[in-house]
Image (tube, rainbow, N blue to C red; front, side):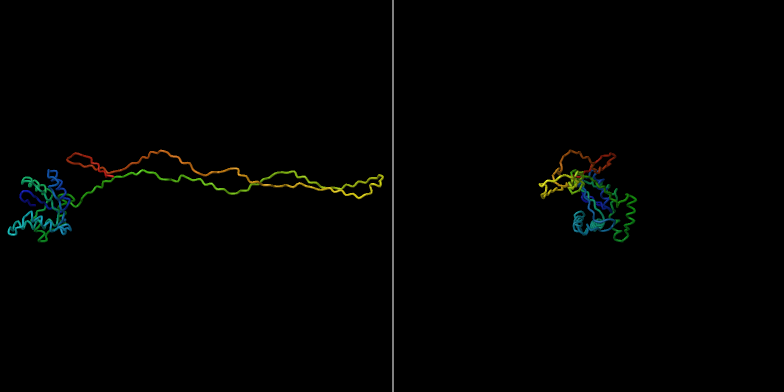
Length: 273
């Protein structure tokens, strides 16, 4: 940790979790969000990709913070130590207006485990730093420093509309069927007959002549005639009716309860549609 011109205080942490906790404590202590910056470069003694990308920017920051006077060995050493340690952790920078506020900020950073620059720099140089042991020690002091809790805030949107649903159908088809028709008729038949009777009477001369008698025989027979008639018309269609229906549904969303300073304030997190 270092301060310069009683205005800037930096704290370097092994994890982002510690840095965020320190930033929250600073905010609770009255240090506004604009006065506190958090930049992650590495973690647990390992140089991260962010530092590799922004190394020139980080070096420029420490040059401005400590100055670039190589003849000042002590200050130059402090700059190298801060830059080396920062590349392997998360840096919290607090901009203050006076020495009193700088001391208050430094105390808060220490409270959340800010790294001792000289001690850590020496361990990095002599390869005595053990990341696993350091992590274990931090977890014992501050809880699980590698765990960052995330609560997903959910909201259901309900879309109510309408659709066609098949509720049944009517099919009409026609086909020819046969049914027996029966009628009882009295049919007349005529049959000619000859009846011969013996007689004995005097004949006259006029009776001697040729005669021809014809009797026609007839009979009745059944005659069937069929006439087709249209006796019914079947129309197939559908009637359309409308009705009003009230649809009720429930939509779920996440409610976040935040406990702060012993008071429970419910905060409703809802997504804008």
